[in-house]
Length: 319
Ligand code: F6P
Image (tube, rainbow, N blue to C red; front, side, top):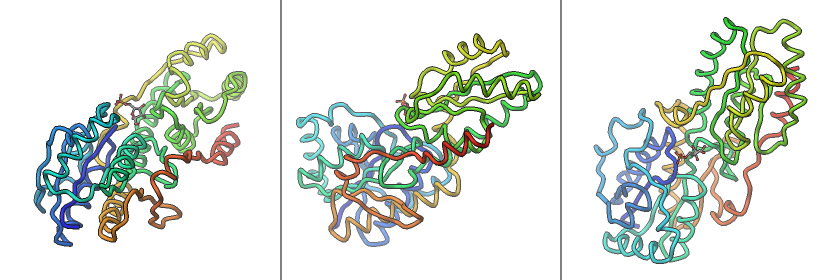
């Protein structure tokens, strides 16, 4: 393998830059030419490709976002779109590709591998919703961003004796809601994986209020529904003064935590190692703190499992 490409695709995540840096430096370390593909699969189709050097990835390990930029590309889902991408790979002599992104991005990597271009998927998404890895790049940073916001909200919530509904990201997965809810002692956590019991939420709020609690926090994963709708329903049912905060895309930005930088550095390098060994159509991940790789198809056929014991614990601790 003499030339490897790297791209980021789908929603960005803090730590993607550290992963790009790792791929680039690892390639150069092994005397492999490395090419950055800008704007994800769209850039591949358009031929937005540049050779990268050691200095191309200097001073990015601490930055959020992705220096290669990203896109959600509909064209690449069609055989015609993919053929255009393959033509570009051939034109540049790129023999293997590292794709950093979520499950949609992995699908593209699978299709390219089937077409004869070895790809390795590196899980990068704040949602932590990729199966067969305990953590995805960006999740830890997003958790810390949410915790920081909730801690601030707590201050004002206590002063005014209010109930707060906080909507966090997570279209299909409740990991951000669950982890931040547990980390911040939320009264209730609403996640797509568990049917919520509205009566129970109201019961808990009333109990807490009667016990003299000055504020309550309810975390809602966006996949469950609108935080504003829940806020209205809760205020109507309890008469407690309720406010809503939607944290939105603040969760996707910011300097990656040490955990995400280390994870990204390990996974990016591992992806290059696999390509060097002639492996293709794999995803890299971390399980029980060990680097692992799995067949991408197997990963796509599996569903990410949220830790329901943690959910149970959060209920037990917020009696
Ligand atoms: O997949 C990551 C994610 O941040 C989801 O949690 C969220 O629903 C989605 O991306 C938002 O996507 P966009 O930035 O395209 O609106």
